[in-house]
Image (cartoon, rainbow, N blue to C red; front, side, top):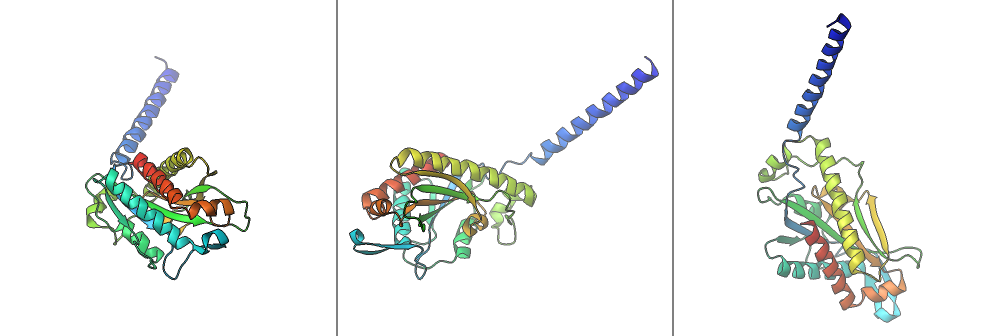
Length: 259
């Protein structure tokens, strides 16, 4: 073998060693399971607004007065809770509020991240809202998810000790990346199921937004805007108990698909 061939062989061996080292390092880095990919054991239902915070509102003659978002959100959330408790009694389901009470955004999020999780399980946060627009033509449902470029704290002194081992193998950047990936899967699942079940509603898609409860809940989370109170046709649907029940059924099916 000539000198040139020997140098090529050495360079080739060095490259192979580098590749193998990177592979081993990467394998060790991600040897721990993704904490957000485990089966869901805890579902947090968040009825938006409440108490002195009415959310959006609209006055329609057919409704006999003003419709307040806080009431619609709570009604649907309660229906989801009841349905989910029947079809999946194995799940732990909690509500951030179960009456017309004001609950701060920080308190809502604390409900989500303060529960100790069963070993190798995860949680899912579902916030329910009703939309409004300056344009009375705006209509349909949409699913909001945390902005991908938003880095949030996911492990700190408030993390339950039972959950620390799930998160501690990863850096903050890694945890945010893993959470973002799961959030997109969950949001897309909700969009697909809702579009199949709510056939008369326009699908406005999945949108990334800088929303407090999506950022600080520290678990996979979506915010569902079920429809527009500012649109007469949708407002007529929203005041219908039958329509709200169909929305609740669609949300339940979305949750089940994410388990």
